[in-house]
Image: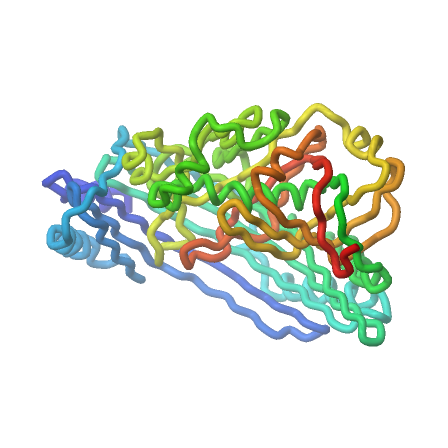
Amino acid sequence: MMEVLEELIRLPRKGEYMEIRLENIFSTTIRVQNGVVERIRVGTDEGGYIRLLAPRGSWWFESFQRWDDLKDKVEKAIAGASLLPKSNIEVVRRAPVRDEHKVTLPDDFRFKSLEDKTSLLLLYDQVLRETSPFLVSSLVEYRDEFRQIYLANSDGSLIYLEEPDISVSFVATARKEDNIEIYRNGVAGKAGFELVKNQETLAQEIGQRAVLLLEAPSFSGGVYDVILDPVLAGVFIHEAFGHLSESDTLYRNEELKRIMAKGKRVSSSVLNVFDDGSLDNLRGSSPYDDEGIPTGRTYLIKDGHLDGRLHSRETAFLMHEEVTGNARTINYRFPPIVRMTNTAIEAGEASREDLFSDIERGLYAVEYIGGNTALELFTFSAAYGYLIEKGKIKELVKDVVLSGNLFQTLDKIDAVADDFRWTEVGGCGKGGQIGLPTPTGSPHIRLREVLVGGSHND
């Protein structure tokens, strides 16, 4: 296939920029609910796209499901792009890259039988249901995917990538009289079948958490010193700040450009935030983005000041900035757009214990169940929380809601712990492309005097 692509990328003759993506995807999905196998899907999917930009023209994008007649498809794309209207669009050009990245998995899920996969899920479902008589519903979902990707462009780049992805998720529903609680969690990663094995303890913990929430009182809102756990802190910085750093939205919005001016102080000085697609073996990582640009680390906030933003070839050209390797697509049916990779709050110097020690009465907010953002405004619901009294974690509470102005809230972060960790479960949606792996990372962080909502506000 490399030889075929080598010929095709020479076809543009008039300064056009062209990308060809070819994908072969092997995948399995299994769903078990209340002891019943509800769904099994196994398949392969072959397809690709041609994306072409005439000089100072508009984008031509065409996706297809078979790899035959590629030369004819390219020639038609070149002809079609020449008919599009002129615009100010151009892209950053780069020196060609020739590279190949293959993956060896310790326990390759492609060679595990459906019986092995289904039996494991039935075991987990049984463990979940047997956790408590108050568990009224259980759901276990398994997904694996192995992608073989060819990327070629008119810069002369030819890249071959292999990308595995595997996950298992658990949902427990507990009920006591009219009170119903749902709790979910799981594991995911760029790994083999070994990642999803031996997760009985996690299944039990998820069932137990749903039952514990039945008895937890609703949080009484007010002004509190708040500690966010690494999961909630990572999701917060991804949703509330990371999306503002994606330049395909930024360069079209003059108000957002003003808000997100480089060098502007946007938080307290203890905060550092980065995006890094080059980290080993995280779900958001790849040696190259989907435009063939090498990935790397981009600091978004450095010592409290806005330090950078995320770019594709196009947005980097339009904003006269460096391309960052953040053009990503969910699959060959969609063009790449500016997306985060692995986004995180960098570890600080305080210990976790230091963050709690001098809080007289506060809130420890844990994990995440939903939220929304609108430029500077945000609302997030924690999965649950704990009251903090005299530096100690006390009563479990639920219905915890954090909301406010992003930059005012960032300025209230006064301590960042040294216990950094990544969270890889879940995915991000943007522009109709849902479920893109975008791990978030953070240590525990502390915010002073934050207005927190609950079911019964004081």
